[in-house]
Length: 357
Image: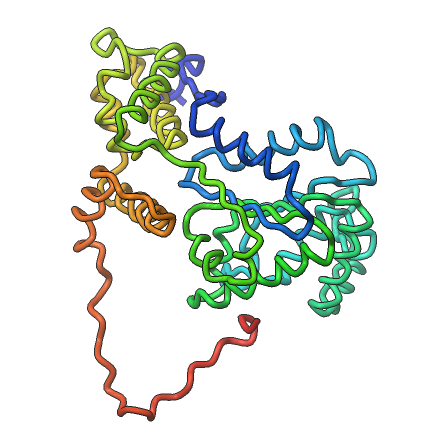
């Protein structure tokens, strides 16, 4: 195709490398100390904004605590599960989580994957017929058999899709805490801010939980200095136009479009690099502005961060509040309608069968 014939792909910089910036290093060190000293049954919660580097941190923590190449044999000191909502209506269910975990621990009776990748129909039937509590007991025994020390759940914010009611997600948290205690493992939960509401409302979980916040950079002098230090690292690898000798010149713009989240900075600059290669030019300020997220997109990010940091007791910065206040009236779905039913005659609320804890 003529449209792509002359594009020089070598000019695209995906920025897929790690910058050891301050917030990441501090959160990593705190998580390492807690993992190496926590008692079985205790919970470590790692939370932060989207694209903060939580998943990469979990992988490096596993290598640091258990050694590179851990889990190659029969023993699995760390079992890591990345949650997916693969149940009906894209909801999270505790049963689907258990089945994911059984696959990761390679359970000999309830693991459906085979070497050829086609699976085993007999195992599929066996799994479908098994009750949830049976699968739960099988997973606990498997964790003990594999000598698992850490049960790690990544993308834990997907649990909020268990229902529209937070208390259902709280029930899941309590069930996970009970599983960790019975299997003698440390439970590590990592996710974005929406998971905080369910975690913080679980009194059973809160008593033995330690929080690690992988924070964005705020609008303080020290944080902005570190933010510019990170931008200087990107300067070294990006093909910048002579009109833009350094990204530091557009620090304010890059901060307003990312709220100090380094993963969002990387994704933005990568998009600008791809667009520059498409147009066969270098990265200038116009390309950076063109690839900036829209106000509505920034609103959804800012609102999530603002809610999470409020729960954590962190005062919001002006970049967040400005983005939320500017778009909030436009995003209101509809006005709340008053109920036309008479008092004390409304039917009692009932949860769907698949959502009862």
